[in-house]
Image (cartoon, rainbow, N blue to C red; front, side, top):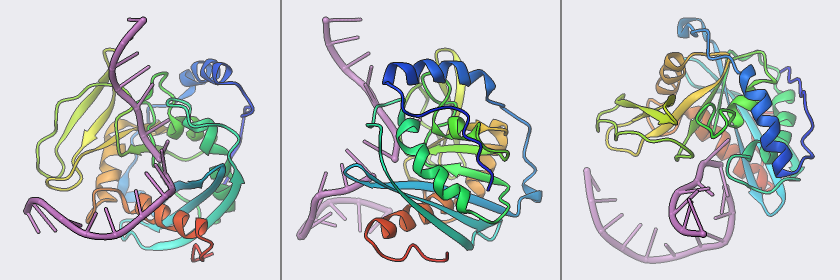
Length: 229
DNA sequence: GCGACAG
DNA sequence: ATCTTGTCGC
């Protein structure tokens, strides 16, 4: 898949934050995505051990959610983990795996936040700027913002608000489980983002894309076969 | 100054 | 994220 990296990553934390502020205005909060036209959805994840990163991207059919392609990419992590700057640590290896994908995907779901970020540019948005397809952020925990606990039923959701702005949706993908935080990455609207995440989570709390990418990344880290190359 | 803080 | 066994709960 095409990935056009448009800026350097060897920056200091201060420079990185300033760059995010300059890039944030470029994020596109639309248009809506017609799910009936979605054929393939991709998921990405990074497993780490020390300063070694093992990135994996998986492609699933939609709405069947069957794995049809898996690609991995290993690289040394040059940036430390700093809340709000995760993109500078994980984007490099993920780009390697994305570029190896041959399937023409219709959307990508990242295991991170998108607009629900202190400067409105979480990993899903920053990397989304390099892509020509819609990107979505689906995180397991909160980074910024406040919200009311969603109803206990599957599909219940509530707004995630940060500094007076709705930056995402807190979604209950399964009855009784802790909710996930869905936000626009780039080139898609909030409503479609939530619908796609729910459609990809028919059986577990996390989307199948995220689960499959996570499992493949762990296999890669342990030297096993990531599978389906 | 204090607390919060994706993966 | 990763380090780790058994264990509480539906």
